[in-house]
Image (cartoon, rainbow, N blue to C red; front, side):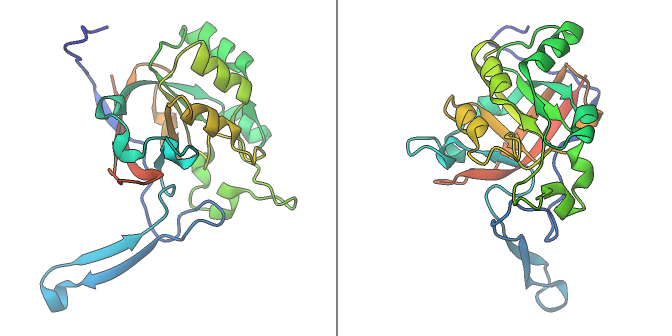
Length: 239
């Protein structure tokens, strides 16, 4: 590790972990649609400008503790230094393709650590479920069943407790709409992580382009004062 007075990041390539934002992206059921309106166009006003509106938890996004806690910090309150963080990637594409309700267990983490070494403190744990391949099929991405529940993979409560308490991770990220499995309508995993408070990143892209260890993630968030979260520009620096 570098000394705490200087952090040196060496990288060979940059991977964009955010999805493009357009009006047809999947949004959480009940959330506002993404809307763009042209305010000025080149033909009439010599410059092109749009305005846009979207939910704070739409697109690739960061969820702030204020979502669930009155005294939780808003996106602006998240310290800048916590937004540049080493990351590990756990590949769950196999089990998630067989079972859309798959949850990462503590046993799965133990297996990953046997292959890759223990997860260091202050590391962002990214779960690659392969779900980003459904981004252009919003109904499939949300995967709401006849029972009215979303059937999407996520972190189990047991795995989340282990990561927070025994590995002291910086946060969790995933390529689905939520770090909680869709079946967990109480969003208990998100509540646990944000109580810490640790980072929550959702709707990530291109996780399959990252190695299991070694990448550094840089999270650009809009400093939405008084907000609940923010669309995020997330880049991975890969050595």
